Length: 478
Image (cartoon, rainbow, N blue to C red; front, side, top):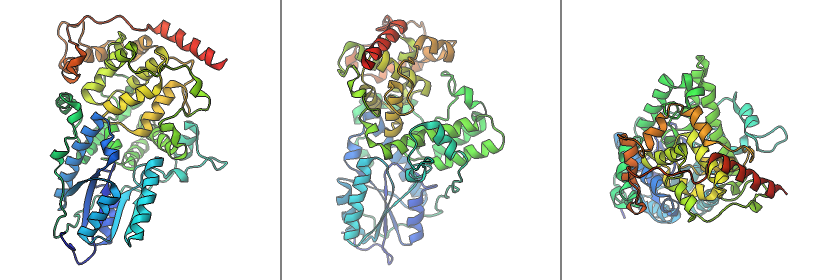
């Protein structure tokens, strides 16, 4: 027991997916409350269940957050266990009078927060959740009849002109306690262990972590890319997207900071700014649907789709070929390999590989969703679930099932000179680039793959896959 740490009772600030100091309402409120602020991250079941790549990326984000806190005269306390147990222990240890955190929107987290709030308040502790993960609280965006939006475009039109408070500045200093509670060491968490040798590859090719890197990327995007974003975001070989997805996923930058940067660009007449703002609202749409229809995370969103004849066996050879980026369809394989090497995948690639799995291979979207959960450093439960259901045809505002992405035509349109495929697929190249070779350093040795292997024939051709999908859909309808 370290005893009371200040004349004023401390505030515990519980970090989760909000690993930043700027535009952090809970942090600003904790500092304004007076007394020391004890910043804590809890390795609970929700962290333990993360996939290999997201957990590795979270570890890097926590390291960056701790460094940023130390620059402000504070530090990050790490604990393991159930959140309520850990917070109660810290309250007793620190003599804290309040616990603050950023609100989550999935049903499980909401129930957990409700129970935690009730228990802490029963203990005589102030317990408060703050906004900060989305632009607009889900209950504040309604249709003309009072319901929530189930179609994206009307929601975009409804919020496009809304006023949004300016982002909050980071505190100049974060008051520290006189004596620090005991903390685990981040290195002891082994948060990249599940990646095995792939961790070293990701460390080389993934984006740098942390709030400073996020702000740097936003600045680069606004200065050099956003003007042509409407077209460049689909050209797969170019640096034409915002590349902010992992930063937004872990809250190393806020959606509100991105929104105001986009608004400034739009006011200055920047052609691509509206497209960027629209993408921010697409992310918003996903989280609002998670709040209003929680089943979107793990069940077909549309009624009736449980009867669709998808394959649910992830061990089938064609599914394995998709997972291992050996489908014989170059654009599909390139996108899957980019994910294994960098932890990210071009957004156009995500649509193509999802369509190929769910339609050409008639495999359940949950199998693809689970693979992405394990492989993406920018894994976001809402965007991932909605994206997969959109591609499969069973989700909100989904692409019609009969619209089957033709990967060959997509390649001609969005990688016309083959630069993206050459960057990631080594087979058939006399001198493959380092990016393509890195895939073979990242994958498990048990897969038995090498860059000098012969490139396979397609497991399902574009024409064959389209017809199989349409036949299955007709059977399903009838």
